Image (cartoon, rainbow, N blue to C red):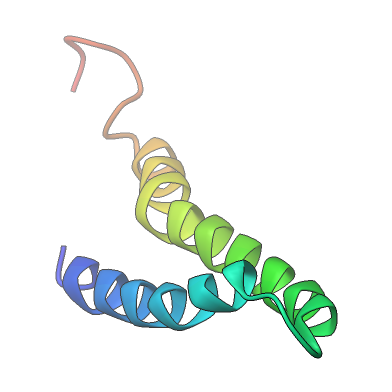
Length: 71
């Protein structure tokens, strides 16, 4: 839980800088869009992995969510 705020602040700052690049038109915009698109996808996927997938897998591994009612 201590990593949620720093992770979300970093993602918001990076996405805030990359999203305007995706909407620009002009000289060099096509090249910058090709660079920014994978970075945006990587930020989204790393956020989902860090905040959702890894905690669930850790909980399953530690046996916290093995079977309802059995501890």
